[in-house]
Image (cartoon, rainbow, N blue to C red; front, side, top):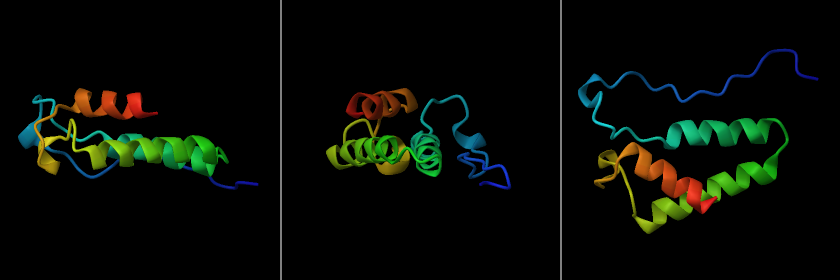
Length: 84
């Protein structure tokens, strides 16, 4: 049994320098969801999401500027969703 609530959130601080530019990297939020699935015992869902992240990162497509790309937040998120 779980005695304490579990929280899954992509916290890393604010980024006022990129506010409104739609270039933030969504992988932390997606990964937090994958960790939640794993914690809840849905390892298949976790593995599918993590494989999708890896596939997109290895392809080099739609990467956000922090990873050397020119993609937007939505582009990267949609690429990962499509890989799922």
